[in-house]
Amino acid sequence: MKLVAALLASSLLTAGHFTRLHFSQSDKPQPDSTIGIKIPPGYRDWPLITVAHEEGKLNDLRAILGNKAAIQAFRKGKRPFPDGTIIARLAWDYSSSPENNKAFGQQQSFVAGHPKNGLQFMVKDTKKYALTDGWGYVQFNEGKPASNLVHATCAPCHQAAKERDFVFSTYAP
Ligand code: HEC
Image: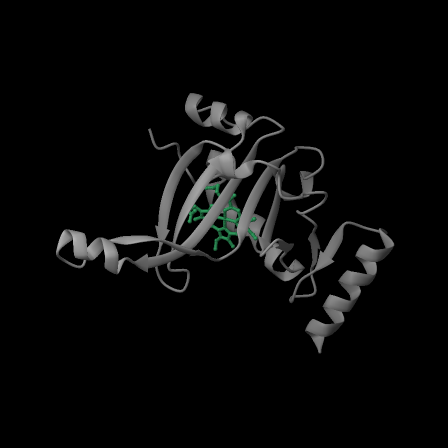
């Protein structure tokens, strides 16, 4: 019930543009980290920053890509990242490849399967996203933005990388 009320309140507020605050499950106001973020055209062709594999419930293979501003800052180790930086996080199912295993003669090959766990972006704009440490955060699930409840988790968890301007990944040479 509390959740329904929170969702209702949040959609009313968003519809009215009275405020940029959303309400999470805890009923605490949450800043909107997603303002104005659409899927950037051409993001799939951006340079690769690094890759990662998450186990557990996520069980995926992921790639971190960056636009020009991002890649320059990553390569030079420049922190904080300049306004205009966009970092993309793509993820796919961590799939065993029977075909590759056959070639190797043993079970060893895992590849990127179906897209999974959403398409995420971090967009640096120190003014627009001042309430979330200068970063906009958004996740798209099959092209559509995820819920406010999902978005409320982004900035708090990225606090753990505060020393590196809230970005966990480092450039893989
Ligand atoms: C529970 C903690 C946690 C939450 C919640 C979380 N992230 Fe992250 N995020 C990480 C970690 C750790 C990494 C680096 C390793 C990886 O990619 O798995 C990361 C990586 C990223 C990256 C690549 C840049 C970087 O910091 O390395 C982007 C973009 C990103 N997350 C966006 C988001 C968005 C958008 C949300 C909310 C929808 C979100 N994250 C929620 C922990 C989190």
